[in-house]
Image 1 (cartoon, rainbow, N blue to C red):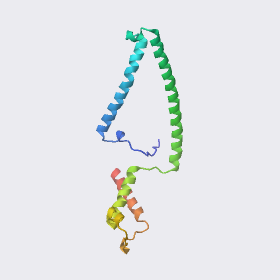
Image 2: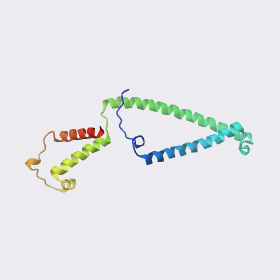
Image 3: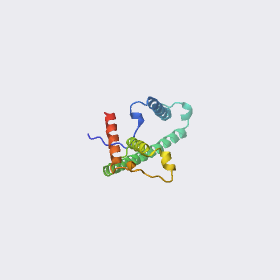
Image 4: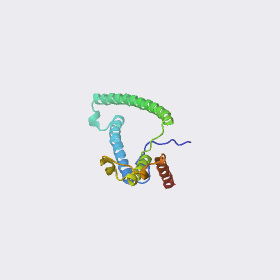
Length: 164
């Protein structure tokens, strides 16, 4: 199966970041507990009749059943909407990814840093370059047409070597 290029980074699924994984897992478990406890209480009460103080009157039981039916209807509608929206977005994404190159923030940042480092060695710090009014470029400071392409190619080779 061909792996599609990813345009995002999720530290939860990458190596390391143990603190983040533990924290997010605990938050998810806490959220599920907050959902499951009331469901167990209400369904157990409906099926078994406990606690008796809530189910003594018939109108309490009918109110809970009506609320459950309304929530079930809302859940089905939300599920249909979510599934439809997911299918539409996946179809759009596949079509757009084929048309546009993907943007990887990490490699773009590395390329920008490499270019900034080159410009600093060639023309001075960024602060100096931005604050000077008139700057005369010396003949040896002129850039070749493919200078930036060479820097980016070298950065790509270095990144590939680091990945291996």
